[in-house]
Amino acid sequence: GWEGKAGCLSDADLAAMESRHKTKMEELEKKVDEAKENAGDMEVLDARFDVARFAAKSLSKDEALDAYEKVLALPKLSSGKKIDCLMEGARVALFHGDNKKTAELIEKAAKLAEDGGDWDRRNRLKVYSSLSKLLVRDVKDAASLLIDCIATFSCTELCSYTEFVVYTIVSNILYIPRTELKSKIIDGPEILSVANEIPVVARLVNALYDCDYKGYLQAMVELQPILVADRYLQPHSGYIMRELHVLGYKQFLDSYKSVTLESM
Image: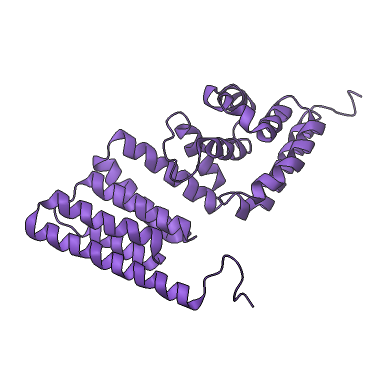
């Protein structure tokens, strides 16, 4: 069994950890009550966010989402703070692999953003939406959102900028026309700034554009373990590899469309 193995909690350790979490939650809830009695709405909001953020880090998905619902239930909550709360809740659902709940929370935030969200929140929401779509294999819609956000990406709580560029390239290579592949991906200044950090992905897109099919297939072989190791791409690694194969063969065979028996 797992008992006694390094890195595994014993029943006693688990009970002690749960006790510490319970004590911490009681302390944070007490601060909420104190803020309600002695302070203003902003202090109550901050205290309620502290509860939700601790729950997100230390408790179950349902407990964390319930804590964010309590934030949303506060009176006089601005649309900006509601959007922040919904995005943080979406991140909890995303972490636990609940794609349906993630999409639901992002959709609610998007409706609020249409009416009263500022530029930064709307832009960050597009990043959340793009990665949510990527997880449910809506790669085409994800691709357009990813490339729109690449110049203004700031959601490092979801992934690094380099990882975001990889998602942008891998999704867009499947859908955008050859001319746009050159201008937006290969020569895109934001992508060029990190190209040295992602040599395999850079080789893949350049080989395709240059019609270097041997190099393209070699880059695909090297890409596969990168896809498998990534939390957003791993569920669809087989699909992406298959579509990349089709893309390469299609481009190669398209050049023979005009060949007829009469011209040979």
